[in-house]
Image (cartoon, rainbow, N blue to C red; front, top):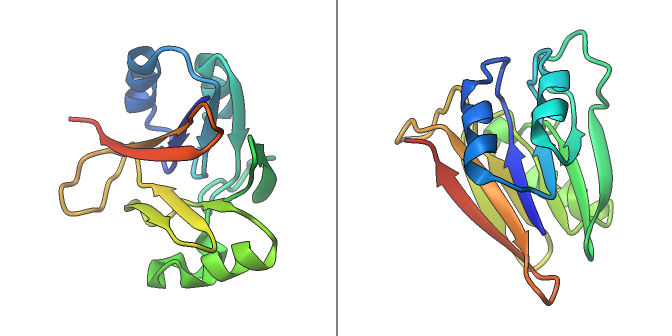
Amino acid sequence: MRILIISDTHRKDENFLKLIKKLGRLDMVIHLGDVEGSEELIEKESGCRVEMVAGNNDFFSDLPTEKNFYIGKYHVWITHGHRYYIGMGNEMIKREAVAQGMDIVMYGHTHRPVIDISKDVIAINPGSLSYPRQENKKPSYIIMELDKNGDAHFALNFIE
């Protein structure tokens, strides 16, 4: 299973469209908020199951603010993260994920990528495809793959 994880596109969809063409077949696309009206475009162009949540800039969206579902054996919680003070670090959101019985929490908002794997929970932030804020300032995304044993592997990628 191959999953594209993105966030904070802010209706600037060029990188998403290029990425979908480049990556080919996906099993799922996860968007972690600040879609800003591009929901239909993302659903249509992905060509697979799409899971999306609303971010702090999705003022008129009908998207839920949080969702949880399974990816293989993993109970996954997706949220934009702004309600969990993730600008100060991800400890609070990780504690909440553990309290909810989640294996993985995925969030956005900071525009800085994170792959944080600990014994209690995996915390994933793909950064931003449109407005990156990390040191190299390159648009980023994460590919999650489940291997033949059902174990998750995460790869942080940048658009040059």
